[in-house]
Image 1 (tube, rainbow, N blue to C red):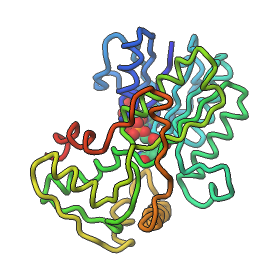
Image 2 (image 1 turned 120 degrees about the vertical axis):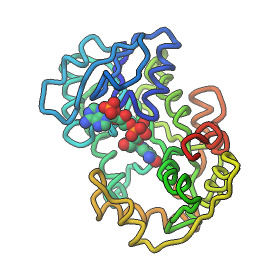
Image 3 (image 1 turned 90 degrees about the vertical axis):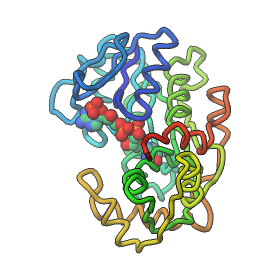
Image 4 (image 1 turned 180 degrees about the vertical axis):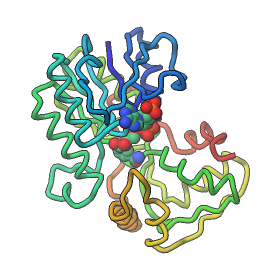
Length: 285
Ligand SMILES: NC(=O)c1ccc[n+]([C@@H]2O[C@H](COP(=O)([O-])OP(=O)(O)OC[C@H]3O[C@@H](n4cnc5c(N)ncnc54)[C@H](OP(=O)(O)O)[C@@H]3O)[C@@H](O)[C@H]2O)c1
């Protein structure tokens, strides 16, 4: 049985479906089982990982844990890792980030710091691990959806920012392979996962426009305006400024080169952004 955190999220939903297709029992964690809309074959369990409760019962009998920091980073992740040790869970597949480089640069921004800290905690736990270090997620483009729906104008500080957006289904497929590994091939492995091609934000917006059959314009704004728009309950203003500056640093060259890891791990090529945009056209219409 596999425990999936963030089961109603972008990766989680795909992952739950994949594991069930493989005939593997799944315990899917969500804060609200009633509205989760998860498949009936999954054991859907209520869990708020930020609550100060004993998490070990959530993991009882699990063969592996999919740990997504979207469901609780920092202290919550540490408590879940401790609970996995207590419940004798033999394997953790951590949804980490390409921002982790195993160099001092990991301390220079919010995203790298957070993921690097949890990677260290997982390594220290003694549990077998696989780290899925994803680059820029294609789903980040959903942040443009309200503006595209409203007036077809995306306001962005760095239209020329470059990345290789990775599809959530590819991340889920790679997670399933690592979680179900019977050969040991993925034990203590770091998988650096990107999409198949580098695109600028302008090119991503063009792919979305193509998918929805309507023009979308990208308008450049200042870094301060972009950081202000991005900051919120889960992203303090200073972290938002760091992120916007980080995107700016990719205008000359992407932060990470394209990898072939999706294909190596899953056996199929990484899904292109144009496909992602077609599949998500409804979100932008
Ligand atoms: N965006 C990127 O470019 C990028 C790049 C590299 C790595 N990452 C990593 O990937 C993560 C995002 O993955 P994703 O897109 O699959 O996540 P997501 O769609 O944001 O899903 C998060 C899920 O977590 C659950 N959740 C939130 N708070 C919770 C809590 N207190 N207790 C239990 N569950 C909680 C929610 O489910 P319920 O509402 O059902 O509880 C939600 O559906 C990021 O946080 C980051 O760690 C992102």
